[in-house]
Image (cartoon, rainbow, N blue to C red; front, top):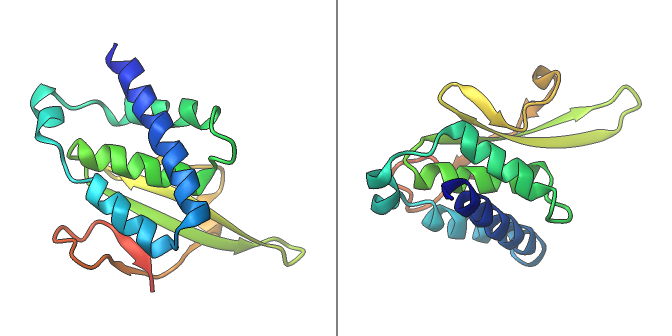
Length: 145
C-alpha cells in the first residue's frame, strides 16, 4: 500500500512539475518546490522510505506523464527525498556532440550516488554553476545564476 501511495504522489508531483515548467519561470518553480520539499514530520515518524523506492516511483510515474524527462524527474525526486529527510543535490550539465550539437541533462545525487538520471558516461556533462535559493536555510535548493 505504501508503494502505491508513493507512486500516486510521484504521478501528481511529476504532472505538476511538467505544468510548472511550461507556465512558470524556472526560478519561481524552484522556490515553490523548495517549499514543498520541507520535511514532513509524519513521514519521518513512520519511517523513511528508501531512496531506491522513491527513485522507482518517479521512474514508473514518468512513463505515464508525457514529456516527463530528466529535469522533471530530477525535480520530483528531489522534492520527494527532501520531504523524507534525505539531503539531495540537483545537477544540470551540458555537453556537445562531435557534430557540435549541444545537449543538456539533469540528475540528482543523494548519499554519495546518482539516484536518478545516471546514464552512461556522466563525466562528459559539464555542470552549470548554480546558486542558493533565497530563504533556504539548509542551502540544498539551487537556481541558475
